[in-house]
Amino acid sequence: MEALITLSKDIHNTLTSLNVTHWLAYGSLWGALRYKAPLPWDTDLDLGVLRGDLEHLPRGKLKLILASKGMHIHYSSWGGFYRVTSGNARADLMIFDTFANNGYMERVGWEAYLFFINYKKMHAFPAELIRKPLPAMKFANIPGMPVPHRGLEMQKFHYPYDWWKESKPIGC
Image 1 (tube, rainbow, N blue to C red):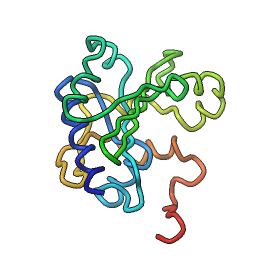
Image 2 (cartoon, rainbow, N blue to C red):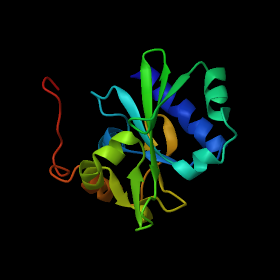
Image 3 (cartoon, rainbow, N blue to C red):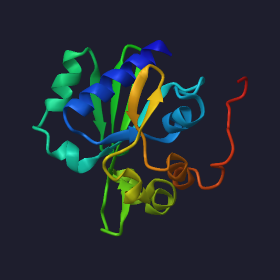
């Protein structure tokens, strides 16, 4: 868990220094909302990032900075995310963009394009939830981790069938 928290802090600091809008997403947002830390059983960090902010960076800059801190980064065009690893800790930077200019943010990637019904149902949300400036929340030893406005509202879009339940893995 300590490696995951360190990776979270390093990625957050890097994205902040590059002016890349990012926020806790999916399971990591649940952790912040419920425990002010990663979920006790979580194995990765989930962050949402804005495509436009990444596109303004010089090509390769994010990879170069993360590599200088001992991290590896790989882009999945299928999933539309960057996988960042450091030792046994990993993070997924899910990229969101507006496509139809309908006021909603949607995940990028071939998977989102080919399986658009599922993605529009569970991986899209109103853009107002990530309007700048984003609120911040304590996340382990990180005092100011960005979160969506009305954080629980975001989860209603990502988990429409069970957002009100805490689903722990067997044995927790």
